[in-house]
Length: 329
Image 1 (tube, one colour):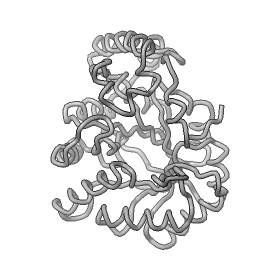
Image 2: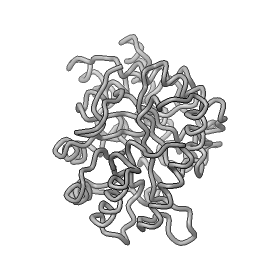
Image 3: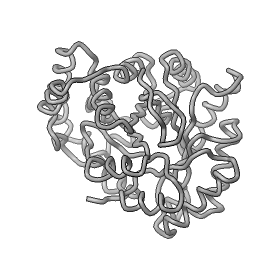
């Protein structure tokens, strides 16, 4: 497993991390026992960066990680990142109020069983608050010793620059993969400019870049997926046709499709860190394999010939799912 810095001055972590949204029922039924098996496998595979949030299962993901750490004992074998700023309130879906963020962080620390987290993200921007003021709030968490570094999630490059002018931003989390390439229009470049990591979630395209893509029947039982444009017909059939071409290329190169998708991401910049999530240990091994692959320029050309920019049919979010992420192009 290759290693990279998490932020310009942060710890060295595995190039492939783990996204713990999968510890909830977001993509299908999850069990705490299965989630702990995933964490065991992360240790075995050399994955040293685990990402979660207070709203993943309304605290369930953080609680599983905290219980696992307590059972294991000793210092955590991972850098731990979590987030705050999304709320389930009746009027506002997001809340960047200092009091709310403080309360959310304290609750996260309690569930995780740690005194400080390595990285704390603003999960979504609440436009009622200037981002400079929110950056000051996050900086206060660093000064208080509760957080070692701060990050932003799903923001525009301009927002990133504004926040970074107040306090160094160690990482920006954004969806990025061979099927979602919007970050190439300014976000990757701005992260490199200021020394921030770009932490790529959904790096295998919600399974569209794997050997086992979701079929129509499976999608229908997933609340998020069944209303996502890329998994509705006729888009799903078109996307599965591209998936078949990508699977064939990966097989010809002698690697799992998911590993090839992860490897492509790691070659898009030394500051790019994918965080795939899965409930399956075998799939975890496949994505981890991508963190050790070296691709030649010819390999990269073959990949983008099969999956050219803009190949994915349908938007990455529905209109309702787009609430929160900042659009900038």
